[in-house]
Amino acid sequence: LGGSITRALQAMSNATIIDEDVLNECLKQITRALLQHDVHIKLVHNLQTNIKNIVNLHELAAGHNKRKIIQQAIFNELCKMLDPGKPSFTPKKGKPSVVMFVGLQGSGKTTSCTKYAYHHQKKGWKPALVCADTFRAGAFDQLKQNATKANIPFYGSYTESDPLKIAVEGVETFKKENCDLIIVDTSGRHKQQKDLFEEMRQVAEATKPDLVIFVMDSSIGQAAFDQAEAFKESVAVGAVIVTKMDGHAKGGGALSAVAATKSPVIYIGTGEHMDDFEVFDVKPFVSRLLGMGDWSGLMNKIQEVVPMDQQPEHLQKLSEGTFTLRIMYEQFHYMLKLGPVSKVLSMLPGLNAELMTKGQEKESQAKIKRYMTMMDSMTNEELDSTNPKLMSESRIMRIARGSGRLVRDVMDMLEEYKKLTKPMSKMKGLKIPKKGEMSSL
Ligand code: GDP
Ligand code: MG
Image 1 (cartoon, rainbow, N blue to C red):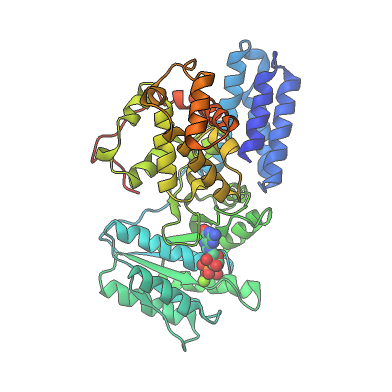
Image 2 (image 1 turned 60 degrees about the vertical axis):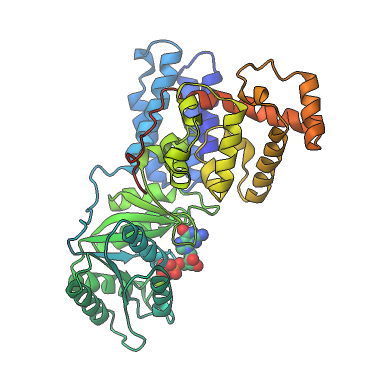
């Protein structure tokens, strides 16, 4: 999605004059991109109308200004689509809260329940899991396994078939045990769909959740809007978790779910493991969507892996607007250390398109390693230089020989570096948090 919108904006940037036709063409492309990525058609139309209303071409000053205003309008409107205007209920540590998870079978409820519990447990909460899915055989076993792995107390039954009974008993039990986050996992299927919604209504009535979280698989496409709306009609959905954002999902359904439930997305699932769970922030998400890069997200990730006091001065250098080959080398080093390259790369503007192709994480990793091997054959002078003319033919040949690579490979790597220089210079003025100031994820 990011790619196509970025291209649309790029095309607009390349136009010498921004007139009605150029704006229309840009909007047409964005509309197409959004529809292809499963954003509900009604929303896309609204977005288009809003942008046209905001961007009154005749009143705008020439050239540059117009582009900026159009870009800003697109950014703002996408943010607005994802921001229902009111935050969801936030449980308080130490105070018992009941959180009920709803969503269709297979959407990722049970997995997300555990991730949610684990995420809070790491921050000192006392979470607990209740399995009120009595429809699917094996549901309790699955929750039990997850909970045991994360060392989280759980409640459920192999024999009891009444979800209400289990839900109520589970919640009561954990309230007595002073758990402050009691999570109720529910069923996602019934013989009849209307029975499922009735069951959700009853479980909600019996357990009086402080928050109902609707879990949605990001790959369900245009169905997202109606599905979310159907749940919202039977229970008071207050927040959304979008799962499987790691796959080939188009993700546009998230925007639809927010619109249908008028509730914010609070987390996204990015894999099957307990840690594949991220707090959702609208602005960085939209920045990423538009190919503008998510610096704060990247910084948080880097700081998670590398403690602040062990980080070399390269952050300092970046904040001064300097980007050298050595900095690129160190960044590659972190990326490899940070695991699935795709997640990190998607936060870097410029990098994602070139270095990273979805589904080719292995190849990308190999490429990064290859680049690093070549950089190992560079001198300190070369690594720390900010002079683009330094890399003479003879130096390039020496590096190629030293690393057992072709001259072409070295040129490739230098090309990559050159491409990165521009987005990296945007780091200038970056505030580097001091030790202890980091927001722990
Ligand atoms: P439920 O039926 O709604 O409880 O869904 P489950 O939690 O059982 O998940 C269904 C399947 O989706 C399981 O195989 C999960 O491992 C998988 N799954 C859940 N969340 C994610 C995610 O964020 N990414 C990926 N790749 N798989 C997920
Ligand atoms: Mg389940």
